[in-house]
Image (cartoon, rainbow, N blue to C red; front, side, top):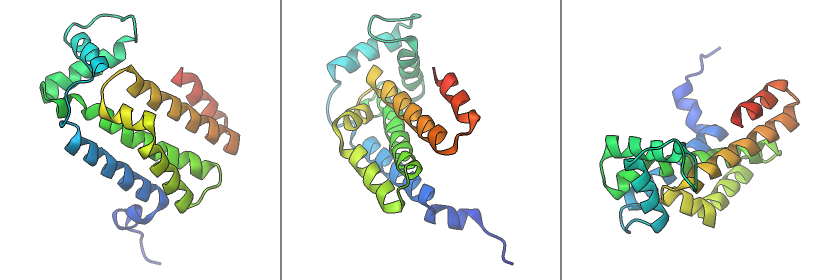
Length: 166
């Protein structure tokens, strides 16, 4: 029996195709995110990232802390400030495809779902600017994935993941 080589077979699997699609969308966002200026909501996040506090009127401290990490690591550029939103967009695409799989969809349904999410309004905005909606969107898609896993598998671990998400 031949030994499976995971790095050759993983990109051909359903999950591998979703991850490659997500990486492609992340790369696309990184390449084109510097073309327009800061959005007004993004300016608030940019200012809050420079002056960290325990909480803000609009959102909790996580968004500003991640903005600060981006500023320290990648500088003041638009592309650098929008790096984490691009990553979250890719993760949302993968999770949405996995939700389609949990609901019984095959590879085509998973890719259609991920494509629909990629070109949808909230997802496009969340991947193109750093604001509180960027990470809220990711958390709610992750919660939907955990609920789908829980309903399909009836495994108590997934309910624990839901509790930790909140």
